[in-house]
Every structure is written in structure tokens, then in C-alpha cells.
Image 1: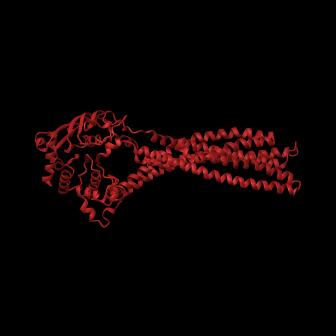
Image 2: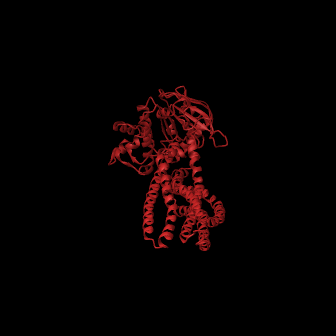
Image 3: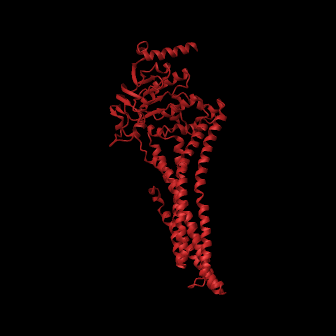
Length: 573
């Protein structure tokens, strides 16, 4: 983690140095106060009172500069550390493959990027202030107290081990709760996220009370766990305070007997009490720091888990930085299984070839592996066995960025981002002109709708596209993929919300305007698939049929069954 502080090295150096200035003042002032009492007030020497008093004032001002300066530079280092760490985590998350993304819950990633990073930010700030101040004050206070009177130092020798043992016992019992607390925060965030995303579903099914109860359970669970953990560790402060006060009583009692012996004066008792107070308070600070350190360990582990997670889809050595020229796709003996599964194949022994410019439909029952199949083409996943090639080159040999820039992929879940329609379109092509945006929308059969809006292409898109219907979102997502003029266009069930007329127009526009683009579409409806140049039929992880509609109908059992079931529904409707 230290590498995230390199950029703020000056703050990391200055903060402890300025804290040392403040601690020096804290350790020096009690001696000066003792001198004021013994050499000034006791003998009514006004000159000493003024002289030493001025020194105390100047030293206090110096301490002010040290304390404020340390706080400023510690904050710069802490906030900078958090910003650099969060940026690195976010960058790493962006590199994740679909398999990596599936490993972490979205709510957990949000907690790690916010709450856990903030915890580590606080640890850095505390480290540059409290963890510098407390040890120096602890050791310095002991030295100064013993230098005044060794017998009073024995009180410290007796008290310290007792305090350390008590603090260790309390910390050992309380700290395990803080790891659980972070998990409870994940749970609360997950409930909130699901509820906000599914707010419309909740209202449709009038499940508000159920969701309130679910949130209350998670929220109370977090509260109770936090209270339990804090309730245990908070005993440290009152217990140490009690011991500290008893120590002060002991110092006064012993010191009163020593006054006048070997030059020991009343001022020495005062300074010794101050030093013991400083020693015990520094021990409280150390205990608090150690507890926060242990608590931050849970956050550190969770952050490290994200940082150490490496994408299982990366560029090979010397990747081919070549544009896709034709868009020919071939699957050779392809098998695929998810890495965290029991090893069962989702796709098994797939062999087929798609010629440049063909429109190919992939049909099959739910769970047959259709989405997984198309995700292998742009390497959202890598095959477990076999090879996927484009234009005769294994997709693993392409430069990953160039490969994906040449493939347009419209996911099954239509996601639009906050901003205008035009800004969403430029996700597909950053420098797209207004004419290119209009043309892409025309092909996707959404231009008339957009141009009928008051703000046209400057219309703001609500969160996740809530101000558009399902069919409108699908067509906008298709337009966004079309705008970069890909050599391969993949539509993952991206026409399911369109009526037959609009779907036919879109399909005809694709064939006419993008005749050199290879189109692979997952279809749920026979109407979507039947006009394709080729239909691939999947069933139970394998290809069970391939050909045109005329070749498959009445000759392929699975395809015929799908056809008959849909025709029956249509006729009954």
C-alpha cells in the first residue's frame, strides 16, 4: 500500500516532523511550569515568572504551528492515498472479465471502493499523527518522570504492565467484530441496491412492507454487531482513565512525603503528575491506534482482494494489432466451463463456421449456452478447450482492445448511461458526427422517435434509461453498437421487446446498410431467426442442428418443437 503515498512523499515527511515539534513542546512545558512554581511563585520572583512564562507562550505558539501543520499534511497524505488507491482499484475492476465480475457482488465492490478505502485513509492520517505522537510521548514522558524522581518512576513501572494487559484482553475480545461489521455493511448496501434498482417491481407487487422488514433486519444486524464490538473496546478508555487517576493519587501521596528531600519541590510533583497523565493518555492513544489498525486490517484484506484479482482474459505475448478485415468466425472443438463451477461444460464440442457478411441466428432453450457462445467471440470469456478464430486468427492472438473495437456487442440487459442520447451514442464512437449518429439511429429504427422529442439528440437519459420503454432502449443500444461500423455485430436477444413490424424493418436495414458486417443474433422467436442465412440450434450444451429455416423445419426435432410451440401460441392468441 505504501506505493500510493509516493506522490505525497513531502506530506509523509513533514507531518511527523511537525508532530515531533508539538510533542517536544508537550514534554518541555511541564518542566517550565515546575520552574515557575518553585523558582517564581514560591519565592515571589516575578522576573522568573515573566521570563519562563514568555518561553511557555512562545513554545505554545510553536506547538500550534506543529499541530496544525501536522494535521494539514496528514490530511493531504491520507486523502491523496485514498484517491490513488481508489483509482487503482477502479482501474483494475474495469479490466475484469465477465468471470471476474461475477466473483464479486456489486454492493461489495461499492463498499470496498468507499467504506473500506475511507477506513484506510483514516489509518494513514492516524499513523502520521497519533502513531507518531503516542510512542514519542510515551517514551519521553517516562524518561522525564524518572529524571525528576526515580521513586515516582516505580509507580509507572507497576501501572503500565497492568494497563497493557487489560487493554490487550479487551482488544482481543472486541476486534473480531469489526471484520463482521464490514460484511454487515455489504449486506445493507446489497439490500438498498436491490430495492432501488427494483423499485418499480416492489410497487407493482405491493411489497413495500416486505422490503422495509428486509432492510430493518439487515440494518439492525449491522447496528447490533457494531454496538457489540464498540461496547467491548470502549471499556479501554474508562479503565485506563481509572488507573490513571489512581496513579495520580499515588504520585501525590508519595510526592508529598518527598518534598524537601534532595531538592524535590512541589513543582516537581505537578510536572510528574502531568508526565504520568501524558504517559497514560499516550497509552490510550496507542490502544486506540492498535484497535483501528486491527479494524483496518479487515478493510485492507478486502481492498487487497480486489487489487490482486487479475483478469483471466488478457493479451498474450506480442498480440496481433490488426483490424478485423472480413468478419469470418470459426469455432473449432470449443468447450467451455465456468472456473468456479464443478467443471461441467456449459458448451460442449462446438464446431461451425460463419462466413463474412452472413446473418446467423442462434436458437435454443433457456440455459442451453446461447449467451455464453456469443460472449466467447469478443473474449468476454475464454474457451476452456478448443479455439475461436476470426479471419483465421485465434481471438487470443488479437490485441484485446482492437478485437473489441471491431466487434459491436449489444448485451441482453440494455444499459444506458446518464447523459444525453448523443453522449450515449458516442460511447460506440467517441468522435461520431451528428450525421453518423442520425444514420445509426435510422438503421436501428429509432430516429423518428428521437427526432420527435423536444430536445431530440440532446434529450437527457434518466438513470439506467428509465424514461424510455424496453423497445426504445433496445434500439438505442443497437444504434450505439452500429455507430462504430463493426465488422462483427452481436445481438444478444436484442429484439425481444420489438413488435414484428419494427423487427422486420430493423433486420432489413441491417442487411441493406451493413451488408459487409457479420451479424450473430441470439433469437427467442422463430420470426427473428427464420430469415437468417444460417440458424444454429443449441440444446443441452451442444449444437443439435444447423442450416436455414427450410432445412431445419420438420427435419430437426428441437427446432421443429420450438416452431410448433410458438405457432400454437400465435394461433391461440
